[in-house]
Length: 202
Image (cartoon, rainbow, N blue to C red; front, top):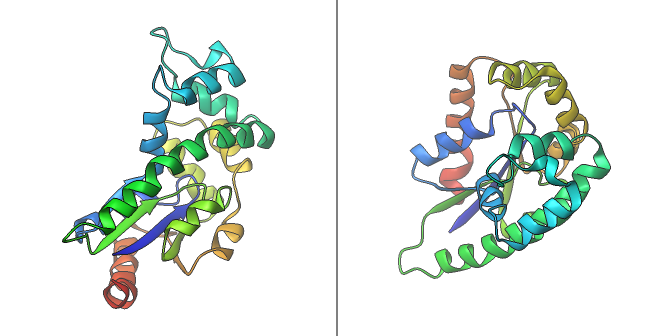
């Protein structure tokens, strides 16, 4: 079972990349989705996050509003690290055993792709994978994409400022795919990556 980490900054194209890998038969795990599960009311992570960030991150139903939490967490690099220190260990405790169980199946999946946005900030996740691919795009392009999906420009810039740079993400990568053009061109680059790298490795 070949395990690939897919990382990249806001608006780089990680979701498009993992959707492509899924279409080729990969099992895809999203650490963001797992983190949201960990934030459910009644969980230890929920209690720790509310204690750290206050009731301002709760919606009217008493659940964590992830947009409000993001605004608080990405108000500074220190606050972002505080959130990561709460969430990442819980996510790791869920993901690591799951990968082990998949690997022990009579017919394990040929490939597992893990969407890990904050791999540089949480390098322990890199120990779970065989290789890392970073999706890169110019910052202004990434901001434009985030805004087109409904995020304010100020929020997009604040989030990017609190995350690793593309250079830092590329430094931990085995492979880099640039997504700076059209969707069609990105798919062509993903196809070449699959043909040249994944078919040989998995």
